[in-house]
Amino acid sequence: MTVHPISPVFDNNSEILILGSFPSVKSREEGFFYGHPQNRFWRVTAAVFNTLVPATIEEKRAFLLQNHIALWDVIASCEIEGSADSTIRRAAANDLTMILNAAPIRQIYVNGKTAERYFKQLIAPQIPANAVYLPSTSPANAAWSFERLTSAWEQIRFAADGR
Image 1 (cartoon, rainbow, N blue to C red):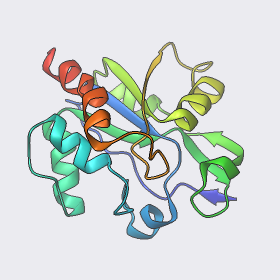
Image 2: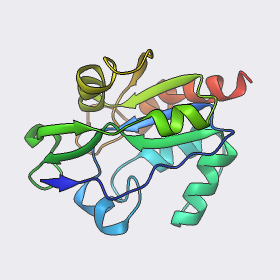
Image 3: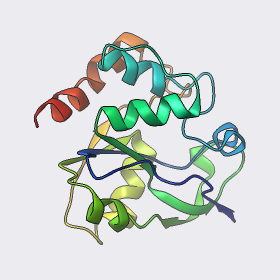
């Protein structure tokens, strides 16, 4: 069983919550979200907010909080082979109440089909909230170009700008 090693990023100004499925091997080694250089999360979100791509963990954390974004994953622990979402077994949910009780979250987004599936299965029955599906920024989602992903992900800026 692999336990999620990364703490959520949020503060009392976070208004949107983005949930991935479970951190990749590279992210677990780095100790922060979307650590694999081929994952397009940081490039896509930086493009959406028209800013430079954050490079360090500190820059990434600051970028999220400046844009009122909370970030975590749906799964707290699971059996997984490497980084392949398709191998996830015996998944247990993260407890989102610590974020939802501390921050005025207006919208939850899920990054990819696996996050969406486990959100519906493990989290939706526990909290009165829906999640909006966003196409995965994973390199495994090669069917989506950077431009197409950025266009789909622009809704997070609109939600953040809706304050």
